[in-house]
Each structure stands twice: as C-alpha cells, then as structure tokens.
Image 1 (cartoon, rainbow, N blue to C red):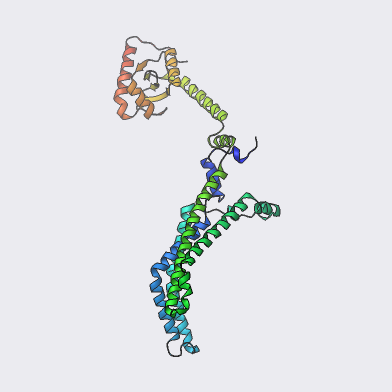
Image 2: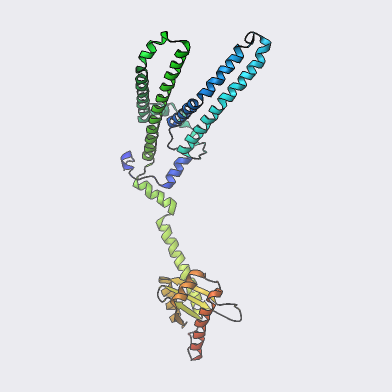
Length: 359
C-alpha cells in the first residue's frame, strides 16, 4: 500500500516524537517570539518613556547648552563619554528585558533542547534539485499566502489607525513645535501598539498552525505503529520463546528441588511453596521452590509423586511467596508459623508416615 498522507491515520508514538525532537523537528513560531518581544518592548517603553525622555532632554542640554561644548574639541571627549554612559544606562534595561522575553518565548514553545541536526551539513540542503522542490512545494506556497495575509492585516490596521487622525495631521502646520512633537509621538505610539497587538494575534494563529502541522507530519500508518511497538517491546515470537525457556528452566529447578523438600505449603491452588530444613547445616528453614497457578499445580504433583507432605496454610503460603525468594531463608517474623508446620510434619513422620525416596 502506498505510504500517503491519507494512510497516516495513527497519532505518533512517544518514541517517534522523541526522535523528531532530537532532529530539531518541533512546533515553533518565530513570529510568536518576535511578537512577544515587540509587545514586551512596547510596554516597557510606555511605562518608562517619561523617565527616558526626561533624561534624554537633560543629556542634550548638557551636550549642546553648556558654553562652547559643541564646538570645543577638548571638551567634547569627556562629554561624549558621559553621553555614552547615560545612553547605556537607558538602553541596557530595555535590552535585558527584551532578551529575557525572547528566551522565555522560545523556552515556552520548545523547552530545553540542544541539537546540531538542523545545522548539520547534508547533500540534500545544497542540492539544486532539492532546493527547487522546496521552492515550489506546498509548504512554500502556504508560507507565501500567510506572508501576504499578514501584510494585508497590518496594512489594514495601519490605515484604520491613520484614518482617524487625518484631521489632526492636516492641521499640523498650525501647531507649535512642541504640540507637533506630542502629536507625532502619540500617533506613532498608538500605531505601534495596534500593529504589535495585530502581530501577536497573527503569531498565536501561526503557532497553532505549526503545532497542527507538526502533529500531521508525525502521524504514522498502522504498519509503522506495529513496527514501532515491535522495536520498543521486542518481537512477540521472541518474547513467547523467552517465556517458554523461562518456564522450562523453572520446571527444571522445581523437579530438582521439590523431592528434597520437607513440606509444601499451599494456598491451596494459587500458590505453592516448598520448604526444606536441616538443623545440622541451616540456621533457618529455606525456600527451595515456589510457584503460582501452573507452577503451583506442578509443585503439588511432584510433592504427591515423591511423598512430600502438603500442608494447606493460605496466609502463610501467600506471605512466603510474596516476601521470600528461592534459596533464601524464612524471615524471623514467619519462624513461628513455619515451625508449627514443620512440627506437624514431624508428628506425621512419628506416626509412621513415610516418604517415597527422592529420585
């Protein structure tokens, strides 16, 4: 079956998403980062514009209004140094705020990601044929349409803003210089705010589109999902073969251990635990075999076959099965219960109970 976009109906698996992220394929809108930076910058300038303008006016007066400073070369050097220091103190906070906003916008979209795959040289990136395909691809057409749409929206917003100020602009010639400057600053600030808000709205739409497009590009066919699951979990045939081998090994250990046990404690059907105790070589009883369901049934069959006593103690069988591994000694908190079982077995032996010889 052809691997077309229509065939890709399954959502991407976590492994595919991780591989795409490692390649640098993430949903990110550069327009959104630029819009957030512009919005933050405009808000910062609006909140700080009085201080900024006031200090600039003082700076201009100091540079041009003090006797002969503007024409005296000897006095211009320290004046310029002071001017650069003042400008730096004015511009640096705005630059820091803009930098923090740019980093925060990128982190909010992508998170922490360091990869060199997007800038790694490859023949496809320098191939003229591949470049022509990218130039006339559906993605390029969509980018062109979105670019034209953005410019159209911004032009409409600018026209709408200027249209309401045409009368004021027509009477600029009759205003004083200070009133004219105030009018132009108000107009530029209003225009900037509206254009920035329009850019922010367009950038959010672009980000939503980028996320939708990435999800669509990462979609998989059902065959790809099956192969991905095989790679993640292993081939089902191999898993079944491993389980069979593990079962065979468990049965082999049970066949060797149960005939030597002193007693088998059962649930009675869900769990079975074989216990062995030799006071000359052991400090405490030891679990030599245990199993659940099928293995429990096999332990009981071997116990009957070799004459090993079977004692039904459901709470004790469950406790030993869940807390003690094969080859380990019984923990101290279970000594009393196991001792009672062994005492019962020894009492049976004293009454003439005889086991079949092991093996």
